[in-house]
Length: 443
Image (cartoon, rainbow, N blue to C red):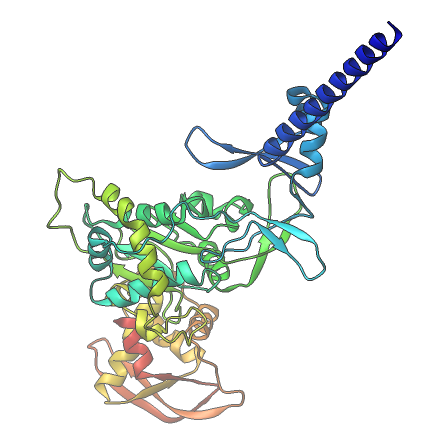
């Protein structure tokens, strides 16, 4: 009887031990499976989720919520086996993307740049995408392919702002922006001019691409902000309620506008804009969802980009040289941005050099102001003019006065428009103004 009881006791003990081991294995298995959905960045825990819009997002969670959801034992396995990162960093990469960035010191950083939803696929064509790029870039089609190739293969490379303009509707400008947003997914964002102007730029400074419809950025502060973001390696980044930090910048801009004259502020020395006038679509099929067809072709297009050699040399800081991207549409905006007083002064001086067949003309600020004051330029402009304003305009034109007094030939224009030389040796700290500069301003 005693042996039977001992055997029964041992059997029960073995059974309980096995059940305990099995339960432990089940908990471990559940914990390890669930740990794939969670990660820790610094002291913040996140869960990988798919939003109602279908986007991959990280949602903040707490260890307490994990205990409540899964129990203490499973939560312990989740927190002990989930990936852990010192902090986050944004490293744009498409060909060899990694979420885990390991430093030489052995620390691991979470890469907040998102992997693309599409992967290169061999053996297919992309006629709709080809048609779109050909339509947008026209005679600069090969440069257009270079631009998209650089976005994909060299995402850290600085690139010019693409500005698509047309006073007509149904040109495909928005379609091109939407296409790029599909390709680069969470790394692209559509914004408004007001959002770009906001000082709280942190939510979009880590994006690869910013697109903006109906762009109107014609203020000097807009100009300075875009200029800095296009060329700077780092820039201050500020979030609401937080101190600003210095952030590396690799964002590119694609702007669209129906205004062909002055949607943005561009001066004649600005090489940051690639302005393209987009023609109206003439072969549009109303029964076809063009963008959806482009979406189907993206894997084949990425395969093409992967193997494609870039045709340009990349000698400029924005890769493309100013000569490669300068267009008549760019010239039109520069002319539209020339202040009226600048243009009026340039026209007066151009009348002199043309009448006397000169390649340059000399004036000091005092006599140039007197010349403008004596002529019948619009009253509103004369009111805003002064010697200080004249000097500021000449400085803006890139000119400097002689440091010491010199002598120069001085001309006047009478009320009949006749140009007369009145003093061959007038003394003054004068400016030398080339004819070519005046023609460029007046164009």
